[in-house]
Amino acid sequence: MCNEVSSAKELADRLLFKKRNVFEESSPERIQTMFEYAEGYKRFLDAAKTEREAVTKLIAMAEGAGYLPYTLGMKVEVGASYYYNNRGKNLFLFRIGSAPLESDGVRIMAAHIDSPRIDLKQVPLYEDSGMCFLKTHYYGGIKKYQWTAIPLALHGIVVLADGSEITVTVGEDESDPVFYINDLLPHLGAEQAQKPLGSAIPGEKLNILIGGLPYPDKDVDGKIKLNVLSILNEKYGITEEDFISAEISAVPAFKARDIGFDRAFIGAYGHDDRVCAYPIATALFDSKDTEHTVVVILADKEETGSDGNTGMSSIILKDILDSISLSLGADPIRVRAASMCLSADVNAAYDPNFADVYEIKNSAMISCGTTMSKYTGARGKSSTNDASAEFVGKIRRIFASHGVLWQTSELGKVDIGGGGTVAKFISAINIDTVDLGVPVISMHAPYEVVSKADLYSTYEAFVAFCK
Ligand code: MN
Ligand code: MN
Image (cartoon, rainbow, N blue to C red; front, side, top):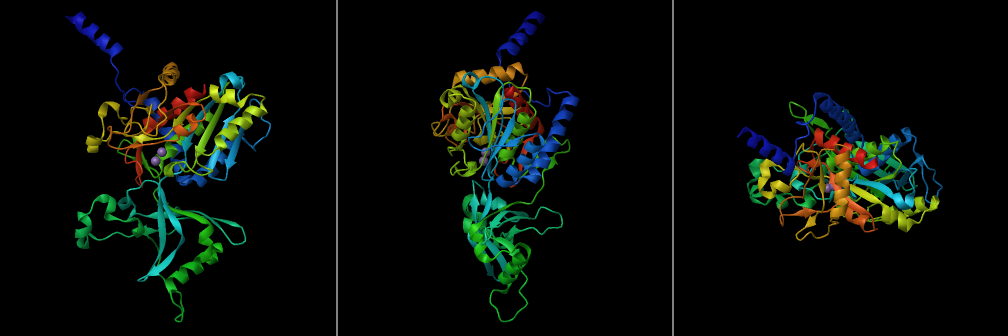
């Protein structure tokens, strides 16, 4: 009897697949390592709330690690590291390895650095009923009601009439003012409360409160707007027309903080997708000894469909790979065919509070490690890369040989919804690609939650991929 039990247990261990909680599998020292890694990530989050700030911060990190600025067509050297800044919003980091490019290809790790937010319109300023507001147009998939009644910061740039560029960041320093989108008090909100969540706050009501002091002159109309403009003009040299050539975004003014008595989780704005951008960049910096050529792509515009010349569907990806290949005398067509990519983006973590939209066997479980999605898409796998079994098998073997704890998932139940990533744009140029990333709770909310175990597992997975 005893033997039968133990052999059944042994058989079960050998045959059954089950997800493992990374914290549970880790020693206290290892958990301490995860927590220390999370501190660096939180500092990165607070310094990089927009794609432009992420590029600036990552270039500073790359330069600190000895990376050189790259220009298209430049001669590259084996063993050297480079960065290519695409218009301040999209960044390529790469190290040239000693392995022959045509047979070894390049190892690509791609994530996006834009996040859902609220952008200013081109003519945003107006005054109404004692308040000055900014008109906005939201960016990416947001639940609009979540963005009212929270402190907001303004981040961005303004190109003035003379061509000079002004950087604006207000609302992050403790001494700064913050900004705000009004909501209706419950006392008068009976009718609003009957509306579906998606229509209770219409897009045109996402107006940002920015002032209330009148300009001290009796003879002028629109005194509050004029007073705000005079403050902006004094501080930045801005006139109202300058908003036309500006990119200013409202983002939550919250800082990244630990969540829970045990500090297992991190709450922050913009985990999607900086929780993948940070691990792939640090994995590259920490993998100096690899013989492979490794390319990190930090893309813009994922949240609006990857369009434009800084998005992942831009031909710049192919241009960079071809430019590197040609510089080393390799045929770019053969290099791309031999390359492989982990497309790093977040996935929905299973949430027991909303269990009905998930299929638990194929959902990403929090703290069970970085999660691979063979396919994304909606309905009948529409608009997905869908990695081959052969390629998934290859990545499985890499992770197994380096002891990476990971899991597999898709986004919610079949026909409930779905989502896309940048994977399909990379595989479209003949590169084997699969999605891998961190499970997120409350994805796209102003304050999202991830597990420190999943953050660190993602870093370890990418370090293994570079080896
Ligand atoms: Mn994403
Ligand atoms: Mn997203």
